[in-house]
Image 1 (cartoon, rainbow, N blue to C red):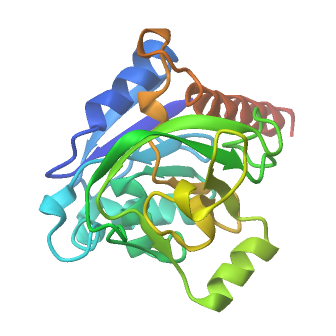
Image 2: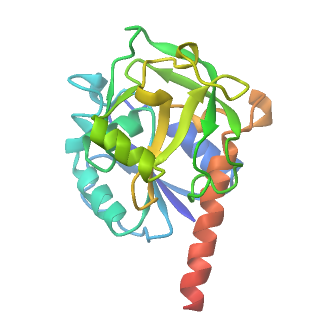
Length: 241
């Protein structure tokens, strides 16, 4: 499987993502500058990653300027053709701003930057990104954001729930929900979603920061391993066909 990690001015988790994918998971990785207007060498079983950071300094709304970068038109085409796309933190914001995912990420209700370990519950393990998790499994994944409050209209939220597009919700260690387990005021404790086609994924927590024993947490690694296995199956099925 080949991963492309997009680098915007202000990205600061691009190298973290590259390291985990290439050095920890032994995958092929190409760094993609945001001004590239071509996306060559990537097929439907590959993945484009929009990493965390502060693209364009988070001026205007987070991700609102990055969506205008030349490469995003190629990322949108890639996603519409069935390619995998993952957005983490600022990447999630960019996916929403570009229309690849519904909703928007607003300023935390505390009006503060939050950086800490917390828990999220797997709400749908029937996607390429969550296939190796258990239904209702609780993972500990760190967050680091100021604009992480997921918001969508009542109709969009209802559709997300109906179509099982909510992948993760913020929760307590025992899996229960409360206002105190919602770090940023996100609607319905939503921490991550996917599109209807199950090939575009966005989440505010940082799985790449929980992928090595030396960090004391490898629970984020399972999400990338899930996608890699799904990609292998897709390539195999294509070859057989």
